[in-house]
Length: 446
Image (cartoon, rainbow, N blue to C red):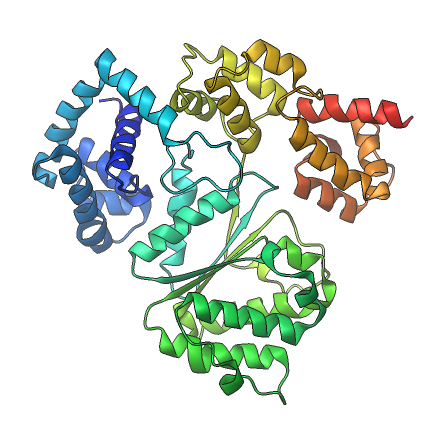
């Protein structure tokens, strides 16, 4: 059996039945069954508990496959059922049907997080598995870092979905949706954040009852969690703070809120009540707010760095979009332009799959006003134009002139935008697309 093709077919057909695709743990069990492993071997190979694999993951996997196959599927007959199913998928007629399903499932332009039921999500199984395993530990903290549009929020959606399947309560807060006025005052920020968290947990916030005006905001936050949230909710609570880099832009908030998160993590290492709280912090790049080393939440917990797509992933994603690329040549050509940048790859494959443009034309016009990336490039240009010092710094990099003084803040901002990469002690433009487009802007400015 070709497991990659089998998984793709299973997920597509599950979507037709309005079922969620197989999650990371279910894929691990399915692969283990196909290779003749025991539940104990599956668990040990991925650092799961045997009970979790046998009592939670496997039954849900069999339920999904049974519904799909129209017959009872167990560990005993699962491998045979999948072999027969895989053979059926190999007929040309079935492949055409699958292609039509892919093209019809999601015709929307790829923008923002990829929905849970989308067949176009590229699974980072190892990373996803490590995160979920960490979050099963009491009082854990996970830090997910990558530049903009690299798939952080799409990954977070799937991690939280898995956490809910464990029976955990989950709350996701995207800090870029908070009004700027809220960042003016720490007490106001913490109070509104607590109110939002309580509502997402289906609780009456009761802020007037638990918020003491004679105490500072950090004390109130701590007592609100201890006396209310962690007491009222029996299950572990996973709190995900997405777009954490918004905090970095407000040092008056960051210098207190970030040490507060570190304090929550430390309390969870020693106090049973706080061990129910698991934190996920998602941000663009390194923090540049000065903090003492023992006050930062960015040097504890599990660090996760998202990377670009590999050649094999791009080729596989092209197949999901229905593109009949017989070898890696076209994928290599696309990656020579945009690297493995997830968002830029999805945009290209979307347009190619709709036959709006051929690859040769896409590559030729990519950095021009008639290219498919024009609006993406314009958004970056607007950001740079509004910050003249940042543009001047970036223009040096575009001209391949290393800035004499490596400004930490400038590097941070450009890396957050995904415009640069660091190679040793040198800085260079992230990809050929950006180099072409911004080279023209540099010439125009001169």
